[in-house]
Amino acid sequence: MWLTLAAGLAQAADTNQQPLSPDDQTFLAHAMSDNANQIAMAKMALAKSTNPHVIELANTIIQERTALDTQLAQLTTDKHLGAQQATTSITLYHMQALNGDAFDRTFASSAVRSHCRMISAYEAAKAASANSALKDLAHQTIPALRNNLTVAMALLRSSGPTAHPQETMASVDTRGSKALVFWEPISLVAAPW
Image (cartoon, rainbow, N blue to C red; front, side):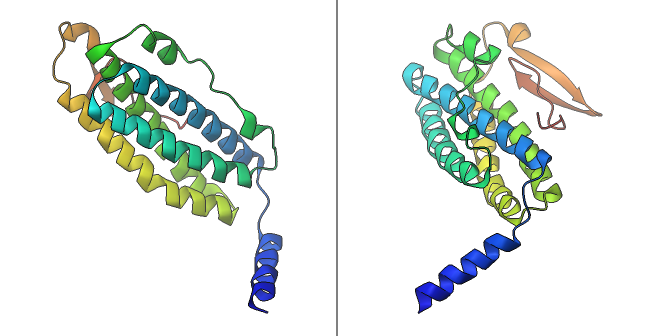
């Protein structure tokens, strides 16, 4: 009896669920694409890095983003989204040629940039979506993304200065506040995508 009641309540909840809007579908496509890129970058970090902190972050990203992909795929009505492959980003392409500290800094910098964008995107989805399942998923995902951002930022801080600091660091003005970043400038207030 309890199983029948629970199944009936779940079915009623599903019928009351707001359908995904075109913006929600776009968010899901971008989120799944970012997951694929982050997983590809993390797998490269496992193959190239000897830094235990980089390896730990890479393993965390692979585990969390793989699980997140499964949850995102359950929300989408476009079943082709789940089969997306990582696009070869310029950063991923350049990372293939790097080793040692240069690779570790670039990996951490890319993780910082990606997690800033994704936190912003998940915050926007949480605020704007009418679909309660997507709002709940966004709400549950943001703390893990923030934790990974914190770890990646700590990796950057601990990497110290490089042999050519003028080539690897930049000062970025983000609406009145300056931030020191490695490799590529990032903006913490940039658009999600």
